[in-house]
Each structure stands twice: as structure tokens, then as C-alpha cells.
Image (cartoon, rainbow, N blue to C red; front, side):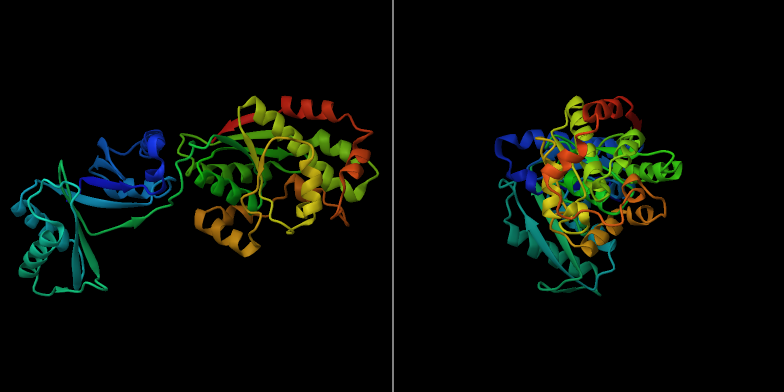
Length: 384
């Protein structure tokens, strides 16, 4: 019965003169998400996008993972005459299991001769005549029959499917996500995408200290995140980090190993981000969660770069992060028991209040630039 899917966006409608650009990117992401599904014309009006398709259920499932979309509805479009609207209302209500209902009408097309309250009363009365089991309940109905009167026709629907909201991925520029195999970093990437960031991943792999299975785990996390990117693939950069970690292991400052490692990660990420025209680094830091995420540690680690570092999880507790990871489908992969380079080299007593001066002293005997340049040169791209 339904051959049109109504796509609603929210925040984009507030963008004024820039709205067209946001809509264009959203429609591009929609088309990418719907590859392999038969679709016809995609049209737009203020706050609405209409997609013609004979596979609305499959399309809706895909679009529920596209940022920028607030909700979806399968709609029935009919001619702008009262008899056609009445017939369509009966068809839509026959597709429900409701006992109570109400009718709500919006009339952007002011040329239509009836006003919204009159349309609602007339269509509500017609529905009651055709369904003896139905009753009107304007306060808490089982179903609301929605009618929109627009220039190109009348649209009727009774289902509203909630979606992710946010901004279309890509409207805010590109960011490089430090993607470990844990719970936090995939959630950070997801939240950055929700604010319109086109996210690429950077994973630090320390073979043979970490196994190929640990890399495969991160690649699977990249595939899951890729469902939300609005792109055909998720770009994951694999940095061979072994030589850096060997150099850190040779230093006598055992308590600073995590601090030094994270400083090198930011240096490498900043250099790669600059090459790939990314505007920020994204991490899964949550304030106070571990030794490298105290305020002192974050300050000392951050001192190696002037590139913005986004930390979407900074004020969240662990349970909040876990809840989101379950919602987006990364949790079960994140808890697989394969170590990454951050967990393998944790010292017994990591420094929780390291200073920049201590870090610089520990690095003074290292070829910092040489190690960073070599790591960047050996970084490989995998498209998932």
C-alpha cells in the first residue's frame, strides 16, 4: 500500500541560508544508505524529504542509522479532493490495530478550501462510519491519523519511526578517531558523527605484542561504525606501533609509559590528520576513568599538538558509555578478550599526575621525530 517514505529532519531546518547545503549532504547520505534498494524520485519540501520506493520497510531499516533524520513514516499520497482523502484515510486506518484514534491535519497548502480543524472533523467522522470498533480519543489515542495538505497532494500516515537525529555526517568536516578495541572509542566516534563529523579511524597495532585477532576485532568495530557514516566504506588507518613501544620500553621511566605512549599517538595522529585534511582528533577519554585520563595526564598528553582534540565522552560515566555501545551494536565486539597496545604495556603503577617537564625529560633520549615519521610512513589504509 505504501510507496512513499516520508523523512523528517529537525535541526537542519534551523540553518537558514545554509539549509540547502545540509539537505544536499543528507540526501547524498540517504542515497548511499539505500544502495541496493529500489527507489524512485527523491523530492524535498521544507522539513521533509519524500522517497518513492516499493521497499519502504527495508529502506526504513537502513535510514534509521543515518544521522540527520529525526523520524520516518510510510505515507499514502492522494489527490487534493475530499473523497480521495477519505478513501485514503480508510486504507491507512485499516492497516492499524487501534481501538482509539484521533486525526491531526496540517495544511501548508492554504489554497485548499477547508481549514485544518474542519478536515480533521470530516475525516474523523468518515473513519468512524467505516470502523464500528473505533472510538475517538483526543488525549491518549492508540493511533494518530496524520494528514498533510501540500501543493502536490495530500499525505496520510499513522506510523512514526524514531531515528537518530543529529546532523548529517560530513557537514562539520573530517575527524580522525583513535580507535582501540575497547568500549569507549567506538562510542566517541559515534557521537562525533552525530554532530556531523566525517570520521576515519586510526588504530595502533603492535604485532607481535598484540595479535592479528586484536586487529580483526578493531576492523569489525570499524565495520559497525561504518553503518553510521553515510559513506560507502569506513576508512581505518592501521599504524604499526611496535618500534615506538620498544623505544618507550627502553626508557627507565616505567610509570610514564602510558603517558609517553599516548603522547606519541597524538603526534602520529596529528601528522596523519594533517595529511588527510582532517581538522581534529577524536578520543574516547572519560575524565578520571583511568590514569591517562586525569586532568594532569590529559594536559600533559595534549601538550604535543595544537590540533583540536575532541573528547565526546569526557563527562560520561562508564555505564552511560556501555549503554550507548549496546544501542549502536559495538559492545559485544568490544568485550572480546583480545588485548590492544594500550592494555599490553600498562605499568604496575602508572603516573596519574604526570607533568610536561617529566614527559620531556623521559623523551629526551629518544628520536621522537624519527619514530613518528617512521610510524606514519608505515601506516596502512584499510577500507571496510
